[in-house]
Image 1 (cartoon, rainbow, N blue to C red):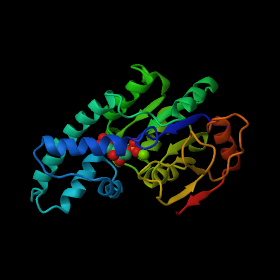
Image 2 (cartoon, rainbow, N blue to C red):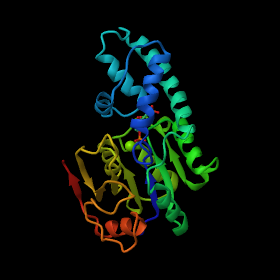
Image 3 (cartoon, protein in one colour):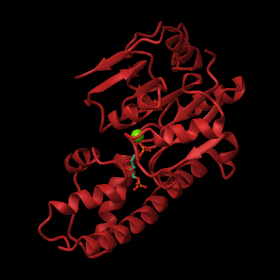
Image 4 (cartoon, rainbow, N blue to C red):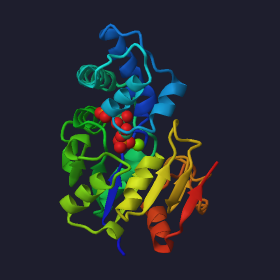
Length: 260
Ligand code: XBP
Ligand code: MG
């Protein structure tokens, strides 16, 4: 099967937005809303099992004795804090504080040169994607993507496959004509449930997470060492992971799992 499209996850895959963006912005939003709640790195890492920022906050509130007792009140507070968080996240991203991960722009460029289409399949809010990609790819960043499917577009967030199924439908392609690039077990499960082969670039929070049934798992697109299956060494210094590598994995379709 010829590779027609690369479907990008956003948080953790395009940039370390969870560690350096969402967590920081949530803590600023708690403060702005007069709450003395704070999420440290360890707690946030744990909470990432819950996808979606508002859902994550609601989950956290269930174990807090100082959260509003009624479900309706909790919901209203979660909406308020989450909206504030997304505003602060946008400010943070627009300040240039969060770079794209190395190798991302280069792979995007290769896709454009070779006519491999691109899509975004994320369960983060559209405003967050807009902020991140307009800073790094320019105001017309959407021109480079045939589909941009975000959290607001789905009824069920990852690990549900809905976001990937919508992206495939919007692009008019089948699952085996695409590859998903993901960083989290939930993202991998979502793509696999849509029958899309997945390449995993591990991010800070999911560096040690168990991953099942990817076609390749590695430290990032900027390094050729440390991948499973191994990548052939390149004679060029600083060589990245590119479309040739992804196509070679797709041709073999290995099933790679990693339980550190
Ligand atoms: C991962 C997520 C997101 C972000 C926060 O999304 O779980 O919910 O943590 O975004 P991705 P919101 O699929 O891109 O990895 O606060 O906008 O929900
Ligand atoms: Mg992710």
